[in-house]
Image (cartoon, rainbow, N blue to C red):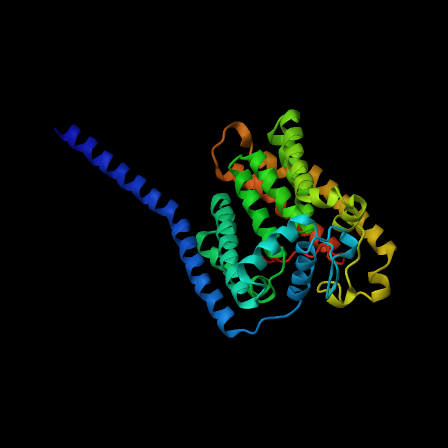
Length: 344
């Protein structure tokens, strides 16, 4: 009798421990949901009371107007701030925005506010799944004045590019590689700064997939670019490729944030660009042979199954940000100017 009673007590204790563990596991998700709702309210207040910052919106709308009027020569599509320098996905996205908002700023701000909440949800999901932060520290992701400004006060195309990138990362940590690559390619089609993530993505693909799988995943990403660029590739292919994928373009010194301390003559020089490229490639090699091998040894057997363990998710998530942050620090003087992820 005493033995049976002891067994029942043990089962109750085990059930209580399991229930407590489940409750603790849900705590980050509950807190993340609260943050999304609270930040949505903050975004609404920003839209209502903070003046809109006029920088690129008029230029975007002028470029979209030229596209909608039938212009397919990229060298002739221009705006107030200069020629169009983004791939075709940018035009499709902002054409849809113009259709939905009539080109008006206020409804566009509301649309971008919704996009901000979606982006924040994706980023929070990445942090919850990888467990790189304690749950209470997730609130730090909502404190960036710059991210709020980029989304709802400036309406930059970076917002769509980085949201698509974060969606691709979520798909990847769930091992949806092919779909993840398609979404990643969509992000690149909006703005090329997303290419800064490509080395780490390729590294993960090689480690997680067969050569055949890598080939078909990359092929799918390439097909996306071809399909999106088709109207321009059929009409003015050289003009499209040279403008939309110009890796040598130099950012205007006046608009630089991180390299203001560099004299303009040095800022635009080819020598600095080559030096930074060499530094970037060297950094990639260091991470490839030193940093990532340490992480991989710490979290072994990551890709044995399709579950999302802490080690597996972290190993798939960490290379993105290690390589991105180094690339950001090195290449921020060019026109690769990423806003959202570095702040996160």
